Length: 403
Ligand code: KG4
Ligand code: ZN
Image (cartoon, rainbow, N blue to C red; front, side, top):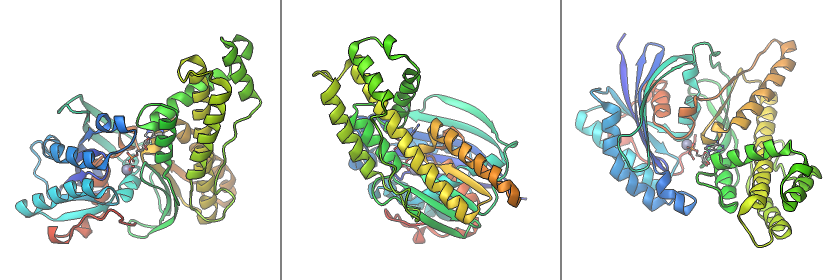
């Protein structure tokens, strides 16, 4: 059987990424996975600045593809065609089209959200990933080889229920096969990752907000166990009492509705008002220091738990209606450890109750390296959609592409 070598390219937002994925019969192997992150560029804005993003893609696309390619001669090109920032998408799509044209190769357009879903599929395989993650401006940087062996994990079986949670999208998708794909619902306003980023900015935490909120929330989990009597300053003791009295409760929007849509903007506003209230109560004109850290981590903890409750609640609701054989959690926010733990527990409880009806639901998350944007997931998706190969003339970027 011929090995098919796919060159995959992803530039939908703020990561310039390229990967070589090989399809050898039913084996899918990630040969290289190169990501040039723009975090340092967007940090000072507390969010992605589209104009800077497309400029950085233009600078990085050739060296990133060169690094991913090595000596490989690809048989097919895969590229993210949308959804995303149009200025960013155009860099990857036009590069991919030009490459396909000059080498006379077929090209496959991949929906970014579908790519995130396929980031869970490597659990079926032994992956050899020679990955390079380039942080900031230097190229190439910390190269590391990885052998990600997920052979012991259960296989994904259709119907598959996928929760995609990223910075640009939050939605539930039901896949009955590789081609029968039905979006069940999506966010009506902010994406979950966007909410993490905005709340982090409000609290003066780092960018991107997800990892920063998660670290602050962990600090609070540890403090929660402390006795108020040993809590240092008087303000810290007051804050601990405030926590004990459960004075912070954020809304779990949409959980009472029967549809599968999400909304995070009300939660974000609730955090803003609570933050202002606490600041005026505890922060005697000092937005730094022990007390401020204390209540910021408390808010981060309660915010994160509200997001997790919404995501887990909606996923379980859909699982009860559609009885999937597999559930997958993917997208940048799926890097959140607490979300992974709580979602897995919820799926286990579903499994326990499903035992009577003889159906066990398996749970899947991507390896951490494939949670945030990367091109390997685009290559894996392409490996399952090789019959969609097209000519460069029919491939276009679409900022609002739907599944
Ligand atoms: O999938 P992704 O790389 O880009 C989009 O497709 O949008 O997701 C990026 C998002 C950011 O909003 C980031 O804050 C969030 O993923 N994220 C996290 C964590 N790591 C990244 N959110 C929560 N907890 C994390 N540990
Ligand atoms: Zn993404």
